[in-house]
Length: 270
Ligand code: ATP
Image 1 (cartoon, rainbow, N blue to C red):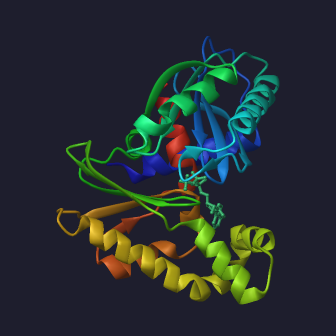
Image 2 (cartoon, rainbow, N blue to C red; image 1 turned 180 degrees about the vertical axis):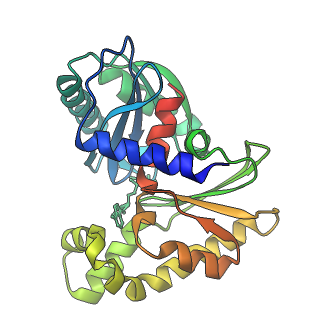
């Protein structure tokens, strides 16, 4: 495993989200990540180098399920068009991912959203497998703390062998901030995302992080997990990794920008 490679890749992606690289690539691969809080598109060139990316906070998916089908298509289509203008190229191939365990219920909806937005769908895989294309874990647990839920996936010899999804995530953090500061949910959500507020917020949010840690402990107790890898937007909270490491007693690695791991992994699977 190469943390440096993984972090450099994500740093490169962060750069191209700010400033796309216009190249003469013969083909582009796009990863589409439809999340509860956020829709992210990651674009790689013919050499699988990140060249562009875009994201938008949107309320089109809840706990991995598409709840606003038309809205989801609109967001993906708009982000696609925005990137096509910036790259001066057409984005043809797209891949997507679904939370593990939701395939029977929702893979059809996710597939249709990506196709209706104008992509030729080349792959539909589960989120931890996608994240692992970037993380390259052989043995360990991927903990994906998103908006609505926390997903725990255990990998052995590079394969996902156990999955769980529990309904505690970033939304609960925002509710706690809202209650503690007397803010509306929307204000609390924005306040929470701002990195300069994280130091002040961490003690307020610690009980929720401890609750998530106990959920992790419950699911990994029958497995020999030596490392935890944090992904998902909620892991952007500065210091969350230290609380999780302390409460689980397991080495916890937080990649550079955990929100971008899965979308990049999806693009690698395109
Ligand atoms: P789910 O996995 O539950 O379907 P999702 O895929 O939309 O949700 P992510 O995009 O991984 O989830 O994460 C969204 C969550 O991350 C939201 O609750 C959001 O408030 C939180 N989040 C995003 N950026 C930050 C930040 N900088 N600091 C703290 N929390 C953040």
